[in-house]
Image (tube, rainbow, N blue to C red):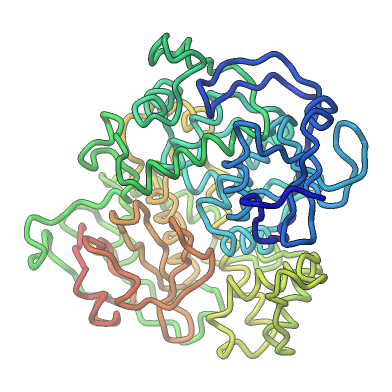
Length: 531
């Protein structure tokens, strides 16, 4: 009879596309992180023939409640961060069954899959995977794209798939985990210090202290290791006992969207200017607004669109930004056929949801829940559900999809070497930082997107949210303002802006082209003009 007791966990059907190669040494993180001798997969099964019963249906044939990773792995399963191989051949032995494969190699794509489920939540993760088109033989493309947006350090990228199936090291996991925490790149030295300071690790030998050598950053990891590291991190976060790295203490140099706080929130810091650009009554033309405004001389920078300098600190930075944006979108035109392309399955799901009124199966126990079509339909609901009663034609569906696809262009400009080395020493706070220097965080990316949207006639603004350590893009469609909720804990979908979405110290630094008076009162109240 299978082992039950406290190892019963709720049944979760989440697809994991996982690649496993031969077994590696285990270092016992749960005890003292001692490097053990290699143990063959078959030995671990035959000496501990206990199985895990999941909802009286799924039995993990290789679960061992006596191993150091057992409780942490149960936590991962319960949370839906890992599923394993359900009714498949074992990736190493070839034996048919249902496997966690705890001793299999942890690849970079698997690491990202777990971290992003943790960061985005399961609903947000499903929406990400369902709504992002991946090139052939690059299933993890959406993971790398989102990792870039969230500031997670990786070796691979959207332009380099060579690392998606390579085994990660302790150093790589530490950098990924700590950069995920701060929302921006950290060095290996910083990541290791964070891990020791917060007791997420004791090193390979506690007696040797908090040294790089004791951390053993080049030691490769198995799948069980990420459960131990992530659970320890989660415990520290929930206890509120995080010990920040020196450059992140007191909110310094955090990925806060580059938001300066006004000395007096009731006063503006700079002179404001009336908007002189008329509102385009049909956003779906996606053409530049007629009658561009004359250049407006703000307190700092002469601009093309009202006071919007896209975070530029000098006239030279602004001019170079606009040179690049105007070259990309010549005459203010946005090529829908080029940027709005989606797969046939995504197109069908959008048509079924908006035009035919079909909804996704939500019951995870349903046999069709994990089908590719249902997951794509579910992702459509999560991403675009707020527009359900507003979109009436497939052209409107395609246009909204095309606007969303703009967000993915950020990755074209990231300098991955500079980003991974975390050596630029300050927060990227402008579109110029991204387009010219290749330095990315949510602020530089958001300002680049709003510059493109201005060029094609779609009203938008950047919402800086220090409380969420994020900067959001807010767009105006169908007469309302909507934010893509892609920040920490978000759903990845669009939500209508409301007072409930805001956090203390949220701010708008550059008014949209329709003017600040066109915004709802709760948004006007957080306007802190910077140009």
